[in-house]
Image 1 (cartoon, rainbow, N blue to C red):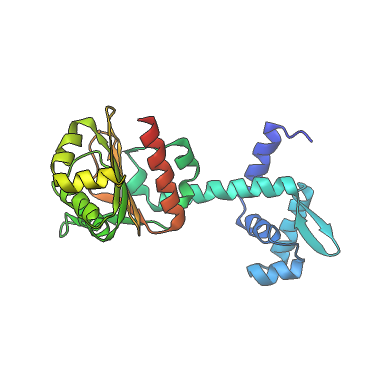
Image 2: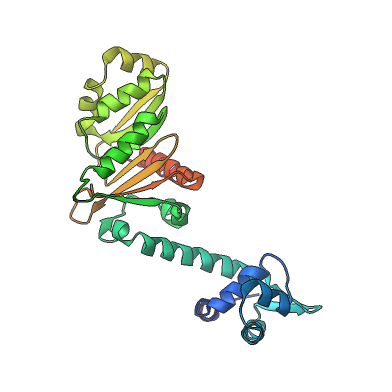
Length: 262
């Protein structure tokens, strides 16, 4: 079966412009249901459910068998992709201040495609009464973690000591930093502690020549993401944090991509 671009565009528009149709398909992808079952589950009126079922059937998105409706396979694929796109838009809108007017060039294609993995994140913002809120939040996570992967585009004076503390707890640290600050970090860590950790494979530092345009930490209990503004200055006032496992995996994949490509 060949589907034209025109037909696909029309189908997407047809589904996207109706919350009722989306709710119906959401229920039908779980299992076939009757009109009465859909009315009971969705709390939508019988007439609205019936009317939209007819339209969905007319557009060949659903079929009816023994008083129950089921979603067609191609329509299920279309619906899942549409809902993923909708969740991406919702995520961007929910954290508009974080994404808007910020540089996302170093986010990998895979990271952008799976941006909804960050849906349970929390936006941390500084306030006039707490101008160090983002840094202190990150610091709390680093102080409690045993293992850390990080991308540091700049050097905060406390970072070498924080890294040293993890290594002294026999934890592991893997960081990507600009070449210009790698020696400063290394020299800021106790020499014997650094040597022991390096020997055991618990301390790895990757110095890159290219500019780093994002901030990332992955600790045992949470990941944190920071971005640069379009004027090339780092936005120290906003940080996206999440303890969700999907977010952690998203962050680890981004870390590995940047580490390998820089």
